Image 1 (cartoon, rainbow, N blue to C red):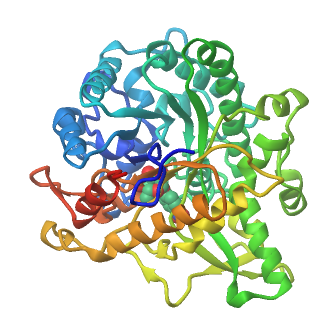
Image 2 (cartoon, rainbow, N blue to C red; image 1 turned 180 degrees about the vertical axis):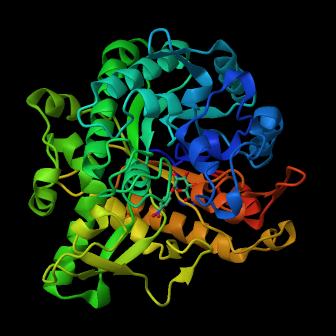
Image 3 (cartoon, protein in one colour; image 1 turned 180 degrees about the horizontal axis):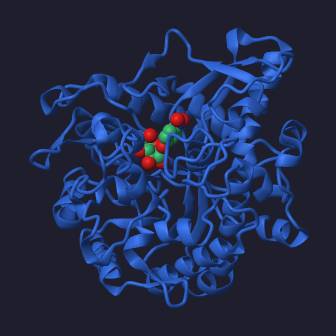
Length: 483
Ligand code: PNW
């Protein structure tokens, strides 16, 4: 038995914080970086709140050492970040392929050096939503059916990163939240590249009729192909584990619910988490998706299924909020404009009236949802191994450094959610090994620009000054292990 700390967690429990490249780095053109679909999207008028772009973001490329200092100041030992594909590789028109960019790689060499010097372990995500524009424009992106070209490019990118860093990083994530970037990016159209189905037209997804299930299919196959490479070539030599980070809101039937609402809540879980997890467990999409989506849902070949099964070493989950679900399966299907994925589920969602709303409309505080999600994901027919919560955090209402220094609601969110995590571990026996709060500092919150603040450090974007919030003090005090 591992000894317990007074905070109720095992002494070897991993407490970390996360960030993502486009959300903090800035330096959009620095070190030979080329545009990603997020540069294109954020520079398209009307797409992002206030027209905010990630051109400068938290200017992390220039302040990386200072930011490692922020980590040290709150006793951080585990840090999750992502690598910008379009900083470490550039488009080679002569060969129609991406090629390594040494200047860009050097930035990550230095970041890994700085983390090592500070005694902080790196957890690295390869793809946090920032597809190089050239691959979207010249290679069919994620949206072209059975796009072996994009899968090959992703494997080449992963291979480059592992050939440089596999001996320095022990935890790898292929894709961050494929649900979010596929549904929001290729179905609802609220995120890059901003594609919408059933709208014929040349841009931004030039095939005119983008299908979110095709996008997901390519992403799953790219994950599996890269995982195969990692497991065959790099893991035997350097060890380490690999996963894909899946996000899931917990779905519960509204008002305790009818049998129909209970079935709808289960359906919502399958459409959110099962869509990705089921192929990794069994090589097939969930039966209820096959039923509701029909011929628009692609099939895996035998070879693809075999590659997907066992493609993760640990389960990595991001979780923020819970949904109350009402069944709509007896109503005629209508296009709501939220994309085909939302319609295909045949349900509607609300939040509990007594759940505290955050600054982000999709995020309400209901901490037991985290315990429920961990239970759902690790039920006997599902994942049986180690689990990491790779993101969890609060979109704060405090909008100045002074307010944030006293933001007890933010602290309440973190302490209630980590208490539910402890219950899942200690009472339910879920093999949770780690928890990564989102985020180290306020950053570019995608289509919401800089209007939403998830950081433990407040960032004043005019001066780039970082100030610890109440949540940072809580983190430092509570998460230190006293035996
Ligand atoms: C995640 N939803 O995004 C991302 O991984 C982060 O980059 C992001 O900053 C963070 O969570 C906060 O948003 C999500 O609508 C975006 O349910 C939207 C949803 C969930 C997660």
